[in-house]
Image (cartoon, rainbow, N blue to C red; front, side):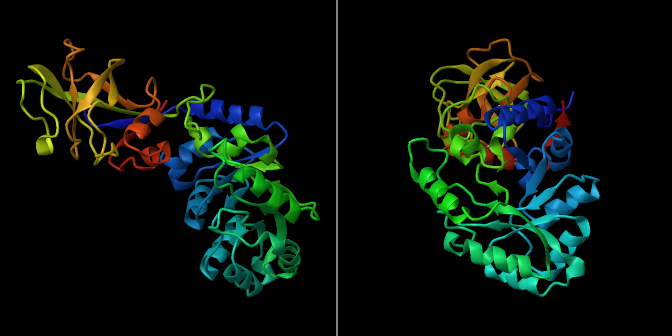
Length: 355
């Protein structure tokens, strides 16, 4: 019986969630976002599970290279684009598509011979104010891209939504209006929607949608989306049970004291594995399917739980930190963060399993 923590990746849940994407945006093609090691889930197994997607998107050239070297031949977009001649050469060699979002990339493509040309997407900044060109430049930029020797084809135009996870915020409508005005004169494919756009803003669906967090079973909104299935389950085991006397502190700093004589279990997972140190006492975990609360401060390798409601707990019992039966957003809310950071924070030493 392994006593080190693990994560299980449910590939059937990935496929189910891709189906949810298609139900929400049936007329759009799907570019599955698998950047950042597929949000901590494992880029290669996730790519294998999502073969029904129309394309993949990653953040960086090295992520795309990992997929290509593993034999993934699906259309593949690098969202940050290329930053130097070396990255551009890799993109051309391995058939990557690149986002163009600032003038240095235009210069790079102008200095690239046609023999190393690449497929590009033009990114417009409609209000995120992070990356992308002004929508007022759209027609000029498209004409310039068509003339650059380093561009073999313009695949489309895209933008990114800033506030789509807030259904009461009209900023998304403004971004859609700006994008529509900027692209009115082009017949190129368009892409706007992230997960929140897919689920909450049908006007953003356009030709291509780019789902991220919803593929992994977490809602982009503050409420749980019952139609999604969790993909990652973070598990560990009890490695010790002891009785702590009333009034005695538990863990570093003594921030929690036992209100009565009670059994405390030690779980073999901590912030060194990706369970947040800032998790407050009272946060639930599942012990043999039943909720028990975390107590005291999370350590690097362990956390403690109050076992008063589980007097029959034994060393070796399984604990679910989030996943099946315990949505990640519940844990993220307790830590005042978001599921993205939980998923991406899983440490390399945690074992990975496919199921």
